[in-house]
Length: 243
Image: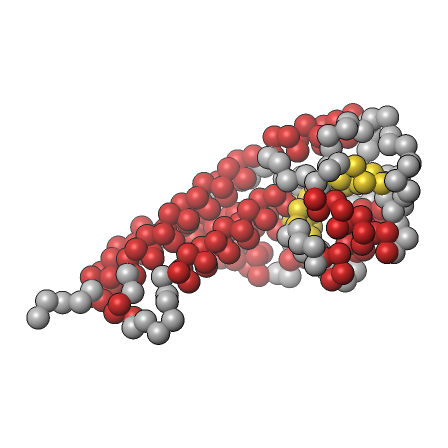
């Protein structure tokens, strides 16, 4: 059984899905003494399930508090939409393996199907992975804005479109480098082929999906200067030439 804590909007949708399956404690249940009032998530008999969307520093403080209570804690991130109450939510989680039985049951219940969730690595990995997903989605939206329906390729400002993509790529690079540094994962000596091979495995078979993702991004971005010079030549060729 799970007891909600907090006032975040998505807690309501998550609670409704749990209640439909008979896994939500009554609203009048007394919260554990160790649980601060401002935490967002769910308590279970053997773990704390953290669904807050704040920064990693605050998450680390909560994880430290759980450790002091000798309680397992799991970071959970997702695309929180009201439709998830009926269809299930996209779920990313971070925490020490193996996850507790209660954590697995919660994830299987909240996801669209049992097992349809991704363990990204240690605490903090789910946030990083979600940030990358959101950044890629935003980059796609920027690109789509530069491609109005019916436009000829020569009428599109390709250089402006790619400059926007490069700016987003720089942010992804900084985010990935920071993640690797936080988890003491050295970039030196990393072989691109080995990293690609690890990342090509099904996500569920990767012990640290977020680290493989970060390494792949950093190694790919090392080639961006060469790509930028090549594309600059292409942009110049595509520009309308004076008659």
